[in-house]
Image (cartoon, rainbow, N blue to C red; front, side):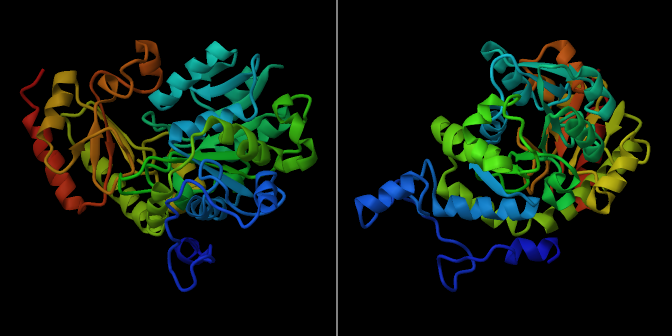
Length: 413
């Protein structure tokens, strides 16, 4: 099956004969016919569900769809994208370990990595995650490479295959946050990444009505259990050790489970992911091309623009050479940036990305408010920067909206 067909028919609905969508199992607990059966379910010796924190049929249906799309052996969903990143990292890390990560990460992820320092897990930040930068920063304490596939909001693009080759050579775990790319543009596991995480609140959900995250494991690593003692108790599972520990231990005990209602909303969103991403990327490319023509703007950044340093990589790595649905611009000053934002009629001033509506935000005063000036600069965030998450509106209307908004900021300094 091709992508859009797989979204609709790749995972059958087995527990509701004739239904085109799985039911919402809005239940905290599941009863069993005997104490022996419940014991077997709890001990993972029999299939079944006992308590929604550790498993739910609607949530499982969502996870199976993500695993199928990403080419993963298993997917584990979480209450938020940040919960997914936290669980993905802590599944293999312990005090004394180090992470290599790009400096242009989402502000919440940067905050998390600094929080982990209090637990003895440190991060070496590189300007951009490349094969060369990773090789230069690897030492005996390095365990994980973490990268956003399309940086948010820096919009740098990672060459998955090249970085994966270094990860395999050095025995490192390569975790890719593919939120801004989605499986519609690329499946990182097929190019060599080991683990993929999504803030599925974004493009996977698509309507801005459910917070969630998900982790997909490619089971490609022949684990060195001395190097990764956090997985040692799961040695008998071999390449599946990561997924088994994640589901049976860390994720279960942290309690950051996905609500069944939100899982259902994500399943609905998944069905149109391919069509939405095609339109979103098309709109983003056309809007970026228009904004480039406006002399009032100091800079416009979009990975697929011909002058972008990532244009060639988007052509070879992403389906159709698409560059995602986020662009950034610089207005010349904070006052001009705010004036532009306030004048927009269709674009909503909001912090989310991946909605069907166009959303715009001033990152320096919001999602990067707690970052140091150096960290902001490293992430491509300036006092006059705006991040635009492009929606599915008619492009003519979006261009007209931004045109009048740009004109309205001319008198600001």
